[in-house]
Image 1 (cartoon, rainbow, N blue to C red):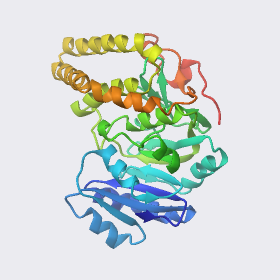
Image 2 (image 1 turned 30 degrees about the horizontal axis):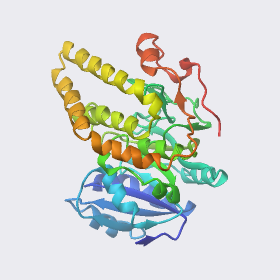
Image 3 (image 1 turned 180 degrees about the vertical axis):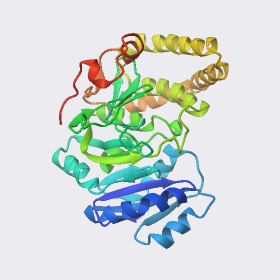
Image 4 (image 1 turned 135 degrees about the vertical axis):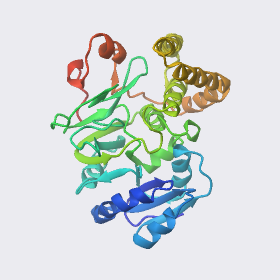
Length: 348
């Protein structure tokens, strides 16, 4: 068990991540004086990651996970071994900035109802642009589709200060994710069977289903390289995108809504697969079929998780749900940026 001296543990899960630690650990460690301990969770690396960090950053606490069963499982195993008031899950390919931490902690301390939050996330390679996974805070539309301020489907915005505010969101990015440890463990933590995609959305949904808030703090900024766990545009990402989105709905959505939403989503997924087939992307169509097959195969397991989650539901907090269709607005009405939606999230 790792007992942190500060009340926050910044936990960096790493698999063969030495190149990222060479780049990003100096700033992460230098900023630790603002109130956190740094913990490296080595996810069964096959290189010298653990030894490199122990030699070059002796203040960093380390632990080793003996078998790599994916991103979500790595954190699932690591956080059982770390005692702190707050966890920050920080992916290895993130660069933090000077003063990034205090705004996050201050926001959590100011509002006991806030279970988790994220900073502004920008793209490391094009530093004025928002980053795909998290951007200016995460939302879900009425049909279960996910999007962000600063990134809707394929359109990513430049950061001109338009999202410097603090707002309530539906989900916070798992790449840089601050959460109250007590609540994290109360709802069961990350679902390690989701492997490496949407696991943070699932966790946020469970936290919101017991009445808590998820926040976005615009005065804190980090940079993300992106695609180092699952490459953007890969068949693996497409597979988890389709399978895990269905899992999220089965595990967390209201039963009355599932009665009409689930059949509709199956139809929409079929149309997506057909569109890919007709445009010469048959391999991607097969990936969607595979995702559905595996989802149906494990349906009993997902419903068991639903029944377990249902025991904890108190007051559902639906802030951050866009009660329209982001697919309709984006593809048919050509609303490519968040400001065109005519919808303002709730301020914190």
